[in-house]
Image 1 (spheres, one colour):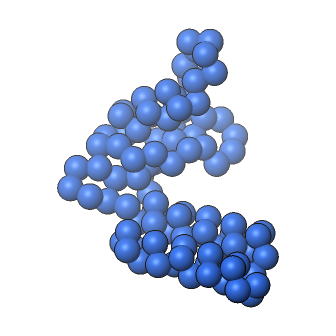
Image 2 (cartoon, one colour):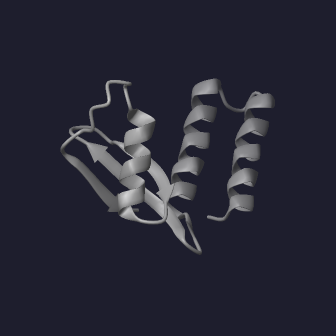
Length: 94
């Protein structure tokens, strides 16, 4: 899904909310689905989406040029301020 399609789909979800055809929870699910689809298909010249997982759970999806850069970015975003870097971080391409 390209950016324009994603924006149109989000706009459709918002319009359905405004018209009373969807409640907030339905709208949030629709928008989240659009964003997830966009992220999993995201790939430009020198960047792509990576899922970075630290232990159990879904982890984070970040855009980066390499798996190492994705790990760095995810660790920085998740930094609790204690300076500790999680030991068991896995990075996978989407």
